[in-house]
Amino acid sequence: MNTNSNIGINTTERESGLGEECGVFGAYDFDGADIASTVYYGLFALQHRGQESCGIAVSGTSRPIENTKLKKGMGLVNEVFTEESLNDLKGDIGVGHVRYSTAGSSTYENAQPLVLNYIKGILGLAHNGNLVNALSLRKELSMTGAIFQTTIDSEVIAYLIARERINSATVTEAVKKAVQRLEGAFSLIVMSPRKLIGVRDPHGFRPLVIGKRENTYILASETCALDAVNAEFVRDVLPGEIVTISPENGIESDKSLCLPEDKVARCIFEYIYFARTDSYIDGINVYESRIKAGKFLAMDSPVEADLVVGVPESGNAAALGFSLESGIPYGNAFVKNGYVGRTFIKPKQSNRESSVQVKLNVLKEAVRGKRVVMIDDSIVRGTTSDRIVNMIKEAGAKEVHMRVSSPPFLWPCYFGTDVPGREELIAYNRSIEDIRNIIGADSLAYLKIDRLPQLCDGLSICNACFSGKYPIAPPKEDIRGERTED
Image 1: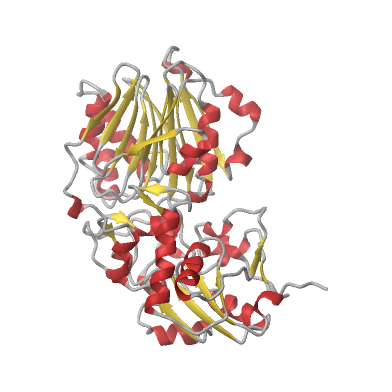
Image 2: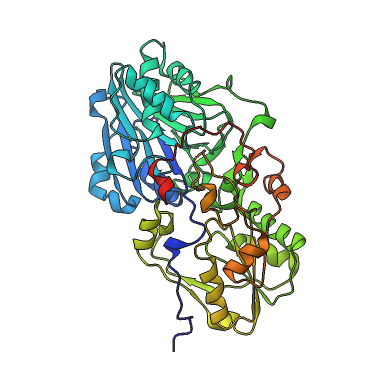
């Protein structure tokens, strides 16, 4: 007899539905050893940040710059790269990217990293984030003769750097001039013929860290990627900082674009959902942040129950926190197919519905006859919360109380997170009780918005998707491309 509920949910349609921006990774081996395999394993650790496409570009600093090699493709890291293809990527400096499209369509042309061959040599670039002024910059560059091959913000950045490089003494100077033209979210890794450069926007929306393994220096979106390649964590790149890595000078830092801490606006959803649980962002452990979120839910929205469960995977740590604070036992109620990745982050609803059907089944024995508290990280569109609740009830649960480890989404995001237009958000123009009725839970509560700074020990954050208070004026034109048609 099958002990699981016969009702499954396609995790490609989970109501979280949030795109995970992108992941960037760069490495420079000062001893001249080939770096492609290191970049590959770093990207593998960042796969949760994007599953549409990936790529690696490498260059040999002791070889002619024309030998720069690029391989990219649609799909997961282990689908795009083979041992043979990695062996063909010869070079001691490299940059890699995993992509989820928050602006620009999901096509091969839009896969990163981008590699430009221009008058000063080769420029490779990987970008995580969204620019709010990308359209105006693209128009300006087009009017001066630029021909774009993609529809992504990253190509605009690459062209700006290339243009500034012509009249700059160094590539770092060109990068600095270019990024001062940018508005929005950007963590960048730039590969020049002899330098690896990392940049984080002054508001610090997206994370970027520095690592070191013997004589190899690394830049990455998250510390989990450093762990994957046995590198030690050196430090975070500060919001607004430009770091230049070269054998001659090691790590050079330019902090002249940094803002005061109270002007920084780290994306709170890195701590709630995006980042891998074992990562540290700006000194804060993501796992501990999620444990705190669960504890706050238990403090602020207690309920009498017999079992606390998390919706895999991002709800699990918060569920444990709720259990620790409330004293209600923590358990597993769901069985998920572990052989398929987080495929629900496909960018369009049509893709979410047609992707591989990954069943998330309920363990009847775990929930039968019990009052269950179910923790999830968010409710965005609310398209499947009702089915998850119904699954547990049909498996025999007496009651299902839903707790959400973030506040209600009320506003779209323009800084690299796939929070859609207001009319698509279930919380827009609805009360908590309205939402509870829609999803069929016995009770529903969200994390209080004033708890958010406590998740990251008081660091300055962006909570615009909950509050509507944007740290940068939102664009007058929609910058999210075809994604807004979801």
